[in-house]
Image (tube, rainbow, N blue to C red; front, side, top):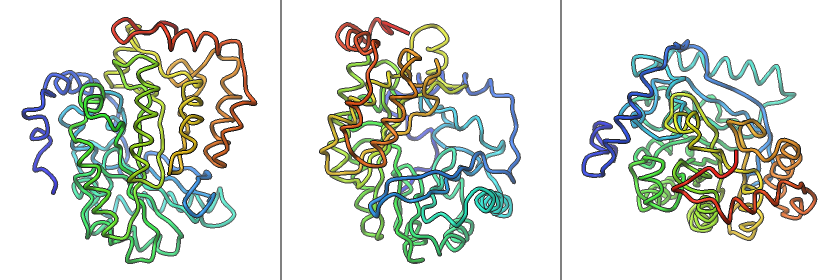
Length: 356
């Protein structure tokens, strides 16, 4: 099902210009990373189909996303954190898992029922995580309740998913769909696949006994605030037909990305936290768990309001994500809400941002 090389993805799709720019930006990266250390690991809480669970989140340090090697998504800087050379050995990957387990023992009273594993690309891509490592990781966490592994649709194949389901793990495949609108995914995010590929992946996951968690991107570049809000509302409802959980990620400005280049020149502002609240409140009746965890909230490079109310609105978003009770948004207010409403009305995608 997977393509032989990242260059194949862009042929005939008009994506080569985006990719050329992205390759030039990514070439500025000057840091190196230890293949025996994970990129990141932390303990948190997540809303799952079985209720709220303590979670162990792991970002493995791999050779990076193959699509990003071709150029990749306009907002994603994770490939800049990947190991040089394109691959990480089985032994190094298992060392990373050991570091994560040690962190969990230090920070949590007991093992987390939920484990979430990400890479800088696709966990199910065997160029990033080989079959031997995938099976060993599945065995390592076989005593947990649920596991989430992230992948592009191409790599959602039966035997790769059943490595986890056959361990008795409730398994979710998290797909970075970004939007249900093909035009926005292609022209704004520079992602090569279509919504129909996401549907195919959801069907493949279901046949393997797994569920789907859809990741959406709120306000990619080249959309106004109002366009981004409406795109998310439509996308959440459409994804709810195929995914039991929809996670909406407001864009934050990461280094070595096109978004960073636009932001530096005054051509991009991350979404307002009011927009995140509005989207969640208006889709609270969708037939899925809808969550959001804005990264870098309150900073200029992350989703933010005026600075005075950011923490309050962020807490309401977190509370909603855990309890799915939209009444929490009625409990937060700020004078900057009027500015946000003006932005929704007057900001245009050909002359933005209207406010910083």
